[in-house]
Length: 441
Image 1 (cartoon, rainbow, N blue to C red):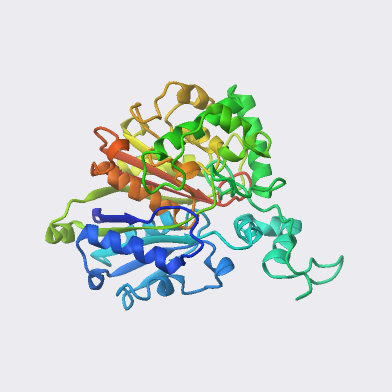
Image 2 (cartoon, rainbow, N blue to C red; image 1 turned 90 degrees about the vertical axis):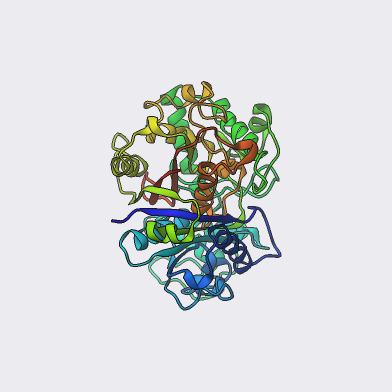
């Protein structure tokens, strides 16, 4: 496998943009990334395009990448569409990395783009709910079908009808998923519509209660994660929410699913991010600085006992092995904090601290800007925002900028090795998909 370098990075601001399309968001991010790399559209030999809910919310299925990139000049070269829940964009990056590493392309593009906002907010929440294993949850499947497809639930002993269901106003399908996966709750500091009795949120809240009991943590520890990430996002001009919040404000915000309040949950967002990858030979010809991809590992969740390694632990172990480093070598980290609890769990799953030590590790200040290993200097999903099909590439844009010293007030001094963890969906008690990427600047 050949060395692979990231030579260009670009992204839109994340936020709620009712007047923008997936295409306009993707075009902005791709244009910025190609300009950063100094490449023309005709030099792109392979593109992987990540998107999660475009078929459900915009009706664009099957050729989402070709449609979104129609006017970029890229069409004609191979485009592969990637849908892998909230890990769609990092999965697209993994495929672009494989194309370069295998020698099938010299320059490749990874894109993640999502328009999650919708005039009917219930549809956005229902779209998020489809990242569950609905074969195992027939009642939730019928409910989502009634909202998204107008299907009525099947009568006992019969088949579902093909009409008459209409849209249900009370789907309750927003929320976050498991520790290292997840989807937005729809809230955030700008207010909004996280709904109680969410399948995602209820499961996550149960995991949170168990985690706090086992670790000795408190809801105030969860609030402190939100405080930290909002403070980081206040320094990020592309973050959705740039307001600074206090622990008391987080704890007093609307309860979504006990003990998780709305400010402990990631917001619904729109946005796009893109990265240009190249072989070492191509980088030499381009004459631009590059960030080396030390490891790109993708894994799927599985049914497991709670004492068995999570998908994030398994993927991180493999990534450290491939990169030839350990967690102590990391200088900066971006994790998938779909809810505040996820970040605490991921401290442990990534080996930044020992089992059950997440709250104590947070209290040391190690994960804040200026600490030993800043986590989510971008603001994370909690405050930078979570346009689910774009999030993974958004994390990597942040880390590329950190390794190239381009982050201004939120710059991590001496950043040399960076890790991103991006998870998505839920399968049993595990994230359905997780991608770990390790970069070296």
